[in-house]
Image 1: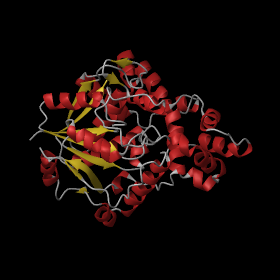
Image 2: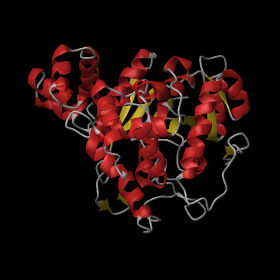
Image 3: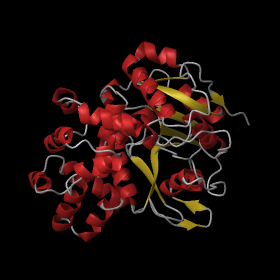
Image 4: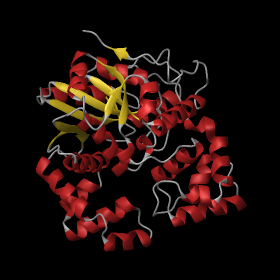
Length: 383
């Protein structure tokens, strides 16, 4: 057995993801496990389609088991997102972490992971952020000045940067092997289509516009109700604009500057999310960070540390996935298909899962009835 672990959102599962899983298999993996964001995503939004439909599609198209990465981990900064997801995969005893990347030079990525670790409390980078640069831009500028353009270029690529976080998290958990796969067709967040490939962001936008995406994804969307966070715009605006200092200051991703900017909104009261983010956005704060803060607050999430991630729900699996579950028994993370049993071990996690699921449902047109999280049926793909 050679098991590979993949961190994903599959938002939605598309042809590029099928390609990724195919290449991982060609790279020697006999088993592929996926830790997938559930209802809330790392960009600070809601998943376009139902998590179980995405999980089933993944298992039908190359994965062997899909685990749910719940909020708040699924909608946290890249470091926590990576650490929590890799922890779940390590619990299945995977041998390697595989990921799509703009950069596939393993030695270069490994060195970049070392650089990133060495800069975790760097004074110069803190000074650059104090001057108004976002943390990613401050990192890239510092690395370019001290290590050279080749290394800075890696940190400017979104998937490669996430890959570096996966490598760091994997090494901390004793996984030394990793497999970068060259992205096919189009770049992250690209607005172009290359034959059958398109970025997740373009697919989501086409769905928003009512356009067909059937040639871009193997996911059967006919019976699915897409979710768009804008549907909850009024609730999000209300939550942020009337929140008090005590409630706001305890949010992950919050800073003193963002906090003071939000508190000033009480005098301005923006009418739309675009207006809200426009008032909060500056060159030192990324839009994704603001979206995560807004999502965390409006969904009423409770903060949970990675150390408390001791249980995980299985959304879909096949016979190879069952073998991975068998190998995981007695480990640091328990895996189950029953939310009730998971709740006994990790009640705060389940509380957040329920909040995230209902929040996402409220972002749909409600044409599909709400699925009770406790009665969701596990998907077992039989060959």
